[in-house]
Image (cartoon, rainbow, N blue to C red; front, top):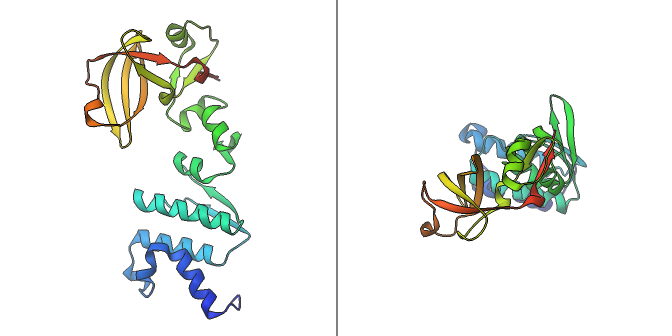
Length: 227
């Protein structure tokens, strides 16, 4: 319909099909649900529109394909200088794909900005609980951990807490841990307050056992009061 040459058509189709090129001659009923979703995405991108609305386009795909297609969408969007509105409930997708994020709750804008500001400076309690995996502390708990005075709830990122040697920090006790791939998330009790602490999964021998005592260092400049 755009009166393009056969060579350019083949090139564009190959660009957007990505891993589906080997299935290019199959009929829709011969594709899986996830493959059909990827074809729908390719059909939207191949015409190179000026504005593209994507409403959770990767929701039916497995994690590996989601990551790959996410990278392809971002690459194509940048190469074509294409404006895209990407609707998602996946915070990782929002953070990695967006130049600007609009966080909404019950039809109202909660916070608007780039990925760094939304992740590190949540505007309120909803933003802190939705973006990232913040430790949400009462004013009394935050004061108990840091000795500083707070007037409201405080959000603190798990990766900004570090674990150290017995001569440093505040003593804590490990309750359990969860393996999240390259990150290990510990649940640790410090001064009666339970915290999530994320550390890099460097080696199996580095895993700390439940019941172990560890020193915890809390970075106070990563604390943020939220309403």
